[in-house]
Length: 147
View: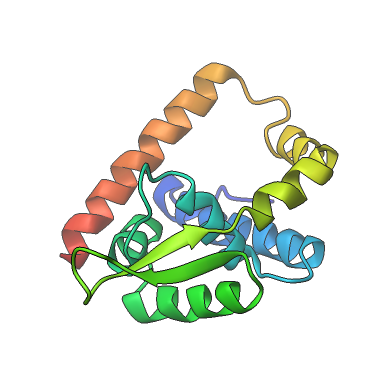
């Protein structure tokens, strides 16, 4: 890839899109029941201590409430999660994992390990930390634009 004719900012911007698209393509081939975006939602579900609301999930993964609701409906039909009414506030819907994704991952961890080792091959711990910190700052910056 030749990136010398554009600034680093534009190169990073384009590379992020390209990388996301390629990861999504690989994931969509790997998972037959769910898309990579739905898989990401399930991974994000595990980041919460308590079942999140649709709104909390939308904020975490950077999607609209309607998009998360649509994905959650599909995941519920495929029995990956349940959408339940919050007992304290009937207006809120909570997302609760059924454990199906975890069982799938436990049955074939080699694929995940292989993919992650390929993705991060020859990248130093220092570069990973720098990249993560940069992405966090970019995420915070974009949050200021959206709000």
